[in-house]
Length: 277
Length: 308
Image (cartoon, rainbow over all chains, first blue to last red; front, side):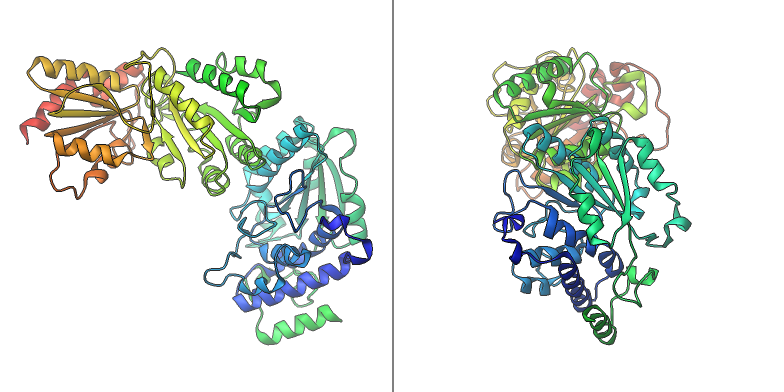
């Protein structure tokens, strides 16, 4: 049964969902001694809204014809997506414990071996063109299906993204929605320091996109914006979601080091306590 | 070859409404018949091969069969990582069609010469690789990949190549005998096979028993037949419009390594360009300059024979 077809009293609220997937992610990254926790936490609220309110997907039938497609282009931030899919019931939550373990399907960059994952990514700049292809077929089929693609800000350095950004408005792909997790920190410094994207919204607008800038942690605003698909005047939509890297754990917020670090036992306990409070 | 390809693809698309064609703003006077007949399944994505390959993967992962078309190195090397990750890793039903094999673009220069593409594409996981030698093989290859449901690379020359063998190509995955002969067997991939046939005629005049076999399917590679030839012949010579590394020669040498009684194997191919500038010239002139003229092929094979 589609998440959206479940009785509303059985549907988790996005805030609760976000809190739960943040906690799963912290435990997964801690247990695996993995990295990329900061970029997982920054996009948790976006995933929470998508998977509780927006996406027409079916955990009992991940390949359902005519489903919405969600493409995670920032494939390194996969722990939080696995957590979201587990919360939805695509697989038992206990499987999250295998994240990055020997023989697990839950690899450290997103894998389509995991039920509910559309495509594997990890090298940046690959997701948007694939999402465009999916949107083209959905539009041709006329089944109302949409394609959502989540980009990091750092990966907007990749030229392949700009090829896609040029293409989608030309073809009036109004069933395509890009969400940029604009947490302002990439792997070696701030976006402003490494390769400045400003004026970011203006760039997208000049390429012909319907541009919406919001607080990427405001679940009500996210739901309002993402529900407004297709975009007005036959244009693709980009939601520039202003987020905080490491959001939800005070000592991780806006800290570059949490692109790499894995929390100690003590810091994990502290982080989980913060989330629970 | 280009015309045969698009005619065959158009026929396949008439029979299968799930076939799409994408091009990277190349294919003028070639692709128009398809575009006119199937406007909803044709897209010129612009000069953007990475985007083209990614879009093709996304379309294919939505249940379609997608052909992408451009010149030589553009739909292959330019977007290699998209082909590796987005297409091959997902087993997406995408066919990469490159026109301008080897020196086909002649005086257009080095950027337009596809000399390493076969080796590089063959290394991708799960892809099938076809280098047809004539229009009959192009027709068979296009039909085959249109229904194979897996990634494929189709390397075409340009236009005007003659048919070299019979019109009937029963199984393109098997090498195809163009000329009977057992003592020396020339294995050729692509239109360079026509020069192999001419060299074989010359060697026959000099009393040699020479066969010519077109090996258009380089992956999966029919090692069994190659080993059989190696048992029966004194000399196997490979000839390809490609560097020796990674192409037909590498495959044949690997196939017969470890076979107890085997023919000697020698390879004729294009030298690596390695920091040297490429001169202008027609395909024929460039092949001649690369040591692939018919007299040079004959002389090279005689040299190989004298070393046996």
